[in-house]
Length: 258
Image 1 (cartoon, helix red, strand yellow):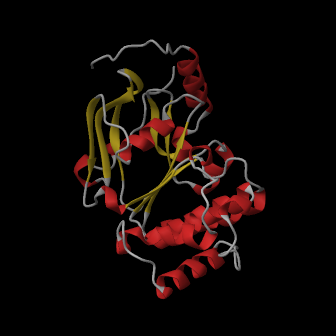
Image 2: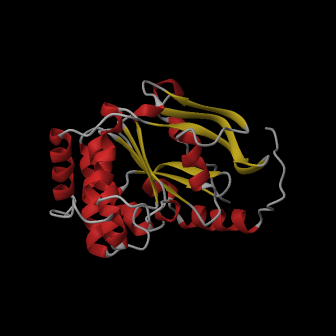
């Protein structure tokens, strides 16, 4: 018999979490993608969100960032606002054909300082070039964004995140379809953010990578399977349970109340 889920809320009171979920149900067109999620992300925590395809992982991230409204329950941000969040969506959701230079794209990370209509000063552009250097793109600032490879494009997006200086960093499949060298370099930046006390949440599929680098895991399969220390969550029983839950899921399911 599979044990009941282990939630972060069992060790972190909801009132002290940076983000808390209270019986959260989220989805599209009144059809739920995630049911009955309760728990919290601790300030400064490094958490992977794992689960089979279709488990609701991206939907959950979009709800945290305010792009989607809950169907039921509540998301609470404690001691931060959505302006303190840096969000990196999947590459497939980003328009790479926009005619802009790499340097200008990275400088957009200064938006909190300059606002929607402010200009980028020389000092801010120098910071953008330093961010490019930090991700291994030295000398790329004048190149068009459309000329970058998939890995180079992801490095550029991480450079922009560096400039945002966000308290909460949310990453949706940041290593999808990129090479091992780029993955290792960008993983190093994530660990650096964690070392600086920032809260980092990432949707990931590589379970060994999660076990090695991410202390906490939320395992989703439309409902929470487990949430807590990674070694306690990514067990064979829990992974089998997650696959079975997704296979049994109906896209026509209605909301249920608990």
